[in-house]
Length: 559
Ligand SMILES: *[C@@H]1O[C@H](CO)[C@@H](O)[C@H](O)[C@H]1NC(C)=O
Ligand SMILES: *[C@@H]1O[C@H](CO)[C@@H](O)[C@H](O)[C@H]1NC(C)=O
Ligand SMILES: *[C@@H]1O[C@H](CO)[C@@H](O)[C@H](O)[C@H]1NC(C)=O
Ligand SMILES: *[C@@H]1O[C@H](CO)[C@@H](O)[C@H](O)[C@H]1NC(C)=O
Ligand SMILES: *[C@@H]1O[C@H](CO)[C@@H](O)[C@H](O)[C@H]1NC(C)=O
Ligand SMILES: *[C@@H]1O[C@H](CO)[C@@H](O)[C@H](O)[C@H]1NC(C)=O
Image 1 (cartoon, rainbow, N blue to C red):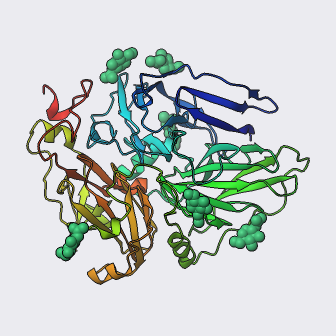
Image 2: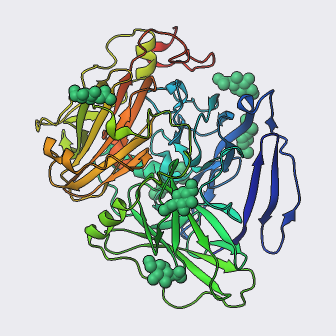
Image 3: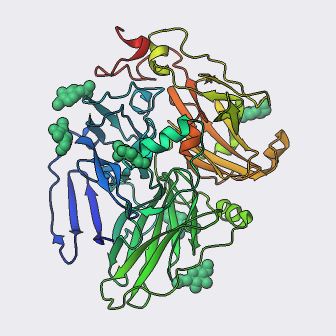
């Protein structure tokens, strides 16, 4: 197995310049010095600055687990390039689709304020046809933290195409902890040796994915990821579960993980020996390299599976002469209660300054009256003898016309605006239904899971306060258990087996937003929906107009 060595790099961002202190690619070499970043056009003010990217998306061949297979490359890279940016910068990303199938990227956890036009899912955008390009243009408004992107169309996510999307603070907004000595993404995820076309065909035929073949760390199989650190220093690792279907546990031998951020919320800085990270979630942890000079395992192992699959990498102390050996650091108990207890400790540090100027409404979310409630229940089902998944008995099917375009151009017959607000228990059917909401309402959204899997739900366009989770079925009495003080706001939340999770959000971001299972086979087979936050007066202050380059497809052709 090829080993790739990476030195944890350290980036300081100033309003007028990007300083790259130390970057190393490959064994033994690294660059030290200041470098002005050329591809950033700094405008009159920082808020106006634009960072430009051109991506050529192609197929390539890699063998992360020893089996040669077709994967996605972005500018030749697998995983895709990391986007490093700063709050309020505008990103201009021109994507050339050199594949043989339609393509969109979505930006996991990015709010796309006032512009669901840029969200990159089939309900908001026409896919980029093979051989064509589309330019995303959006501002990472009021966000600071760790996010990632991935291809949202077909089953391309199983071929890679994902990458980190890091939004740093402007220096006028200090971090609630000392500036780390280095910063690196660890994209962890389950992996299948079958290529994405085979996996998609399996699902299309009504089959199930089955178990993955392994776990990758930054696109690499066992011992592939090798991070060099200096003794005594503290590093920030941004760990995202970019996989298809499996919850993972992350740990580093002999080192604790201090959680400081999750999807844009500054958390209480608790220390953990290991951390559960569910599909689609991101955490920042601080790791202090205060142990004996040696090499240490880092492990991302599958949770609640038999057998347990391990993704294995190495943390190499720069003064170490000892190769890593011996048993892997053991994972936690498979008792679900362990994971739930850990989940309950992930709370907001109320004394930390905001990671953002809080456009969600108020830190005092617990004092805002709920104006609407929706209970959504995902379920495995069969329709016409094929495996499907449904939400409140509706198994979502993407219409040929994106919902957002149909809504904008008043094209009828594409979707129904009456997604049911409660599970009905009736037989599942196929359709495109949208949950209608009220602008600036305060939504209580309950995820019910009566299955034996750990579910993971994602809300596009928002971060939501995770106010509660418990076993059994949610009832109005469950509100008595809510954390109305220091819940974190995030975009992806797990729901334990036979349990519920409740979140709250202020509906202040106008648009058509995807609400989906992050478990990608379930999403692909219908476990998703859209919710509409209407523009009360049609003004562009509430919602940006359709971008001039928006692609047309389906019934929107000619509009
Ligand atoms: C993308 O890469 C492929 C393969 O290297 C190349 O043939 C093609 O011209 C590139 N397209 C663009 C737009 O750069
Ligand atoms: C995907 O894998 C199958 C073998 O299972 C192979 O026949 C097919 O050519 C592969 N597709 C691509 C595009 O590599
Ligand atoms: C495609 O790329 C060209 C530049 O090569 C750009 O001018 C054009 O706007 C892009 N198309 C879309 C739809 O964004
Ligand atoms: C990690 O934290 C535990 C308590 O949670 C503590 O017992 C242990 O000593 C710590 N280990 C290190 C290496 O700091
Ligand atoms: C909360 O943030 C403050 C900085 O604003 C920091 O000093 C403190 O240690 C943090 N507390 C916890 C428990 O994370
Ligand atoms: C919430 O509702 C209660 C009872 O209807 C009312 O007294 C209170 O003023 C409301 N609070 C806010 C912040 O609107």
